Length: 456
Ligand code: NAD
Image (cartoon, rainbow, N blue to C red; front, side, top):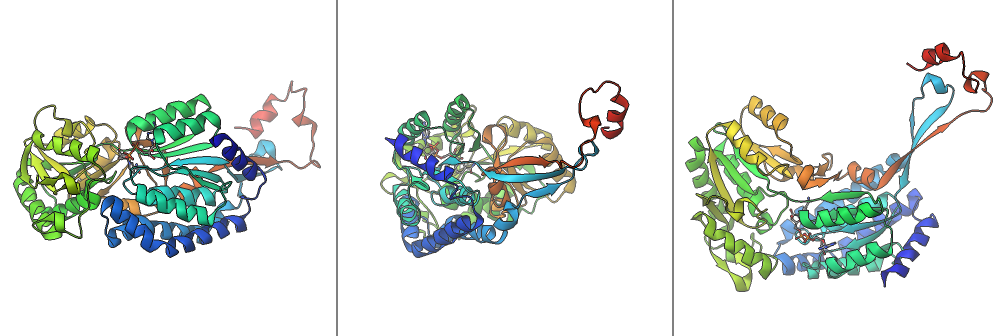
């Protein structure tokens, strides 16, 4: 079913139409205008799928797309220009340039938690790179997937950008069996990421994998506890905890545990009120399957605050737990919901060992006043990215590459890095014909010292 449509995309790409700067620029402008036109519908869809409020929808979804398109419109021309680099003596007087080639027809697969942003941020980068795109939004955020389909359908012909809706486990293998994509950009869970990597390997298709994992927030004894509490709670309970870079659990020096827990409970009360179910600020769990999984974790520790739930409304209150049972699933799985386990430690070395049990987190957040401690964590623990004395906000700075390491992913994007992901470096050396000394040709016998002079 997809084979013919994908072949049409290949033909469209090979016609060269997507390559010129003016074409790319025009598509970005059209997309920007159409997103603006549909902003209300986008917000409604995000509310339906996740009970996201308009402010969160802007800061975590549409606003990021506008900013990225604005950046691309400002910088794309420069980024597309071939870069002239130096040439070594051996090749004198040749000239060397690095061109930026589009990849071709690329596949973008997105998850449900930031359904709009995680679909469109890679899409705008792929357009800027001069590619054709198949976009697969998540079936678990159907209202958002449907607005995405509507917008894309209105702006782009299907040979250029095609939205593939439906069950990813059925659609993606059907497409990848029928067609060789030039790149797969996947955001989602580790198990599906592994399956995609394995299937891409069969055809040597390059991949970018933006995965999850257990991201710790570490609070050292010298941290500003009041600020740490507010920032951990904000990052954790955004989108009801369904944020890939949310602090998954807290590691706190035992000297300040009590103080931190009290402050965090106060922050929950002040941000979401005494009944978060009614709060404008607070979202809902995506579906029953995820809800049931999250509720099952509540048995695994002692609840300090929260622990309330309502299946009908897919509501789970902002919850802090401690005294987690040995071997508990909540400390093995990525929680991806509004439950925050707090674990205390005695020394930084002990805390580092706990973090290493969940190797290579996507994000790490460290709260401390000590520069030495900051350097100790940065130098000793591999993590995708992170913040010092903050949570999640590094994501919104397009100058920082965003991606994982090891289990949390392969590759990084945002801003210029997205353009890099969706283009290939194509190096070309150009040699003049007027300079043609015999040293460049066989027989090479007896020229060793000359070669050594030019190449060392
Ligand atoms: P998921 O893996 O279930 O689904 C993501 C996408 O993959 C969907 O579009 C789905 O249709 C598709 N899919 C599902 N099964 C597939 C298969 N067998 N073959 C091909 N495609 C398939 O992930 P999710 O539950 O939507 O997202 C949650 C996970 O994503 C969490 O682990 C979270 O940390 C991670 N995540 C990471 C980032 C990041 O930027 N690193 C961002 C958001 C979410």
